[in-house]
Amino acid sequence: MRKSLPGRFKIWSTRNIFFEKKKKIDMILYLINYINYIVMSSLVTNNTSNTEIEQEMAEITREVTNELREVENASRPASAVTVPVQTHIIYVLDRSGSMQPLKKAVEENFEGWCKAQETVVEGEDMLPRLTLAQFSDGNPEIKHYDNIKDREKLNYHPCGCTALYDCLGRIFEEYGNEEGTIVVIYTDGEENSSHKWTKEMVTKKIKYLQEEKGWKFEFSAANQDSWAVGSSMGITNTQDFLPTPDGITQALYVSRNTSLGFRQSSAQRIRATPRRVQSQPIAGSNIEPDEWNPLGNVPVDLQPPQLIRRNQTNAFHEFTRSQSSGPQ
Image 1 (tube, rainbow, N blue to C red):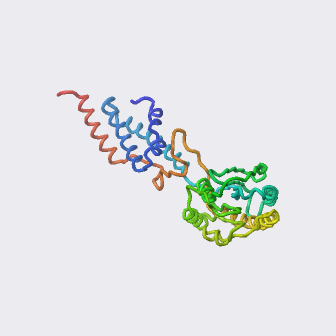
Image 2 (cartoon, one colour):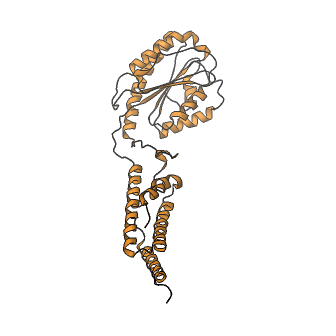
Image 3 (cartoon, rainbow, N blue to C red):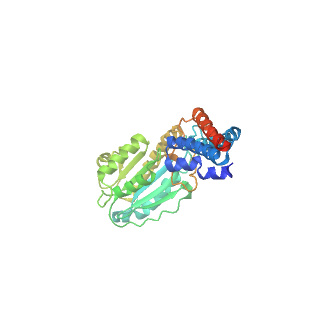
């Protein structure tokens, strides 16, 4: 009989085959062929009896069934999991050179805006996350805080031009899979230096995020018609502000109340969206947890085809019997 069946079988385990092939039909065919191969090898090399073959095939079947059950349990989505509802606010702040006269007012009022968000609103289970994205020209500076209370003091040094589209594009790339995210945009000038993202690309992405992911956008702008500019990107919640310290204060006061309302609606959406427990990828695999569903509706208790097994067993039993009897 074969030795160390569990160790040998684990090398070709169900889980590894699923990750490498990602095709359940390949897995089923492989298992059937593997079982048949073991039967054939045992008969030819060891003159094994039918009883021993039946026992060994039953052992293999048990191992296969256990492996399949483990993979199915790992891949089954959790439909009623308890995941705390936490909203996410992304604060997009213009740091171009024209904002220099407003530096102190921006720092003070940003802190006041954040303080106003330090309360759990209806529908939330905890305080929101905060992402601060400052942009001028070049790459935006993005900092993320898992809790808004953990934020650092605003480090604000205006310089350069206004690459708003590239900043928004970077945000979409990093957080575009989220549900119900709130984006608050402050700028005192029109876009003039983006290189990667265009207005058309940004507008298309905003439309998608609003319609499919429930994102909320606020657009506050000075030195331009905020409604005309915002709506051209698909943002209808806009406000003008004067490029003065008092103008910044008034705009942020309005924005903080708007953001609190957005958080309530976002929390309701997040709570109503099916949420899954994040499973961990298996060591040695480059397949992400959410990319695979190996079993689908295939039954876990996979049994070798009885007809195939019986025919091969009888054929090889006759063969070994004839070999052992020798020439007449």
